[in-house]
Image 1 (cartoon, rainbow, N blue to C red):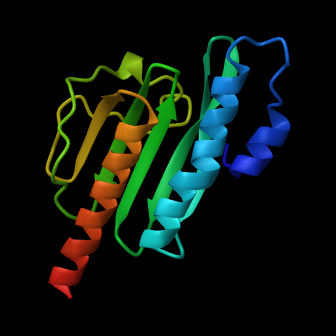
Image 2 (tube, rainbow, N blue to C red):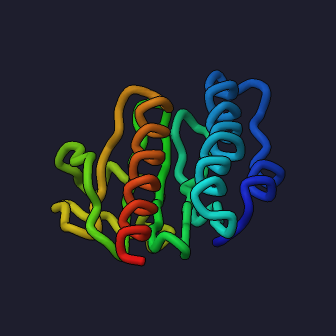
Amino acid sequence: MEMTLKEFAELRRIDDKMLWKSGAKSQLALLAGPVTELMLAADAGAKVTVRSTHTSKSIVLPVVELRSEKLGIVFYARENFYNWAVTVESEREIHGEEGEEVHGYLFEGFERGGLPVYEKPEATRRSLLIWGGNGPFLEFLEAALSAAAETKREQS
């Protein structure tokens, strides 16, 4: 499964009776807005695609791939109204966020999409849970992209 966020939103319309409808819609707006903008600011050729799905509060939600070929970094992420589950793979060493110990069962939708989960962090790949809402997730994404860009400049 691979589709754009727009295709996903059209295919998976959220019933008005769902209690968490506004949370799901704000998640899609975050991905289509600030997350996509961060990716494109770092790399005009970056791609944001839906790679899988998971269900939380009876709502089907996306598991997304955020890929920058230019920076050599890819993120796989999902949000379930409680936290963001993120896997990062990079051509270069990843600095910063360590997160907490992870277990594959917390990464709903990753297995179905054939997406990786690393229970032990390594220099160029790791999985982590980010708590505290969208702000910490955006901060992590921005810091990781910035570090990848800086490393790329140093190697040029």
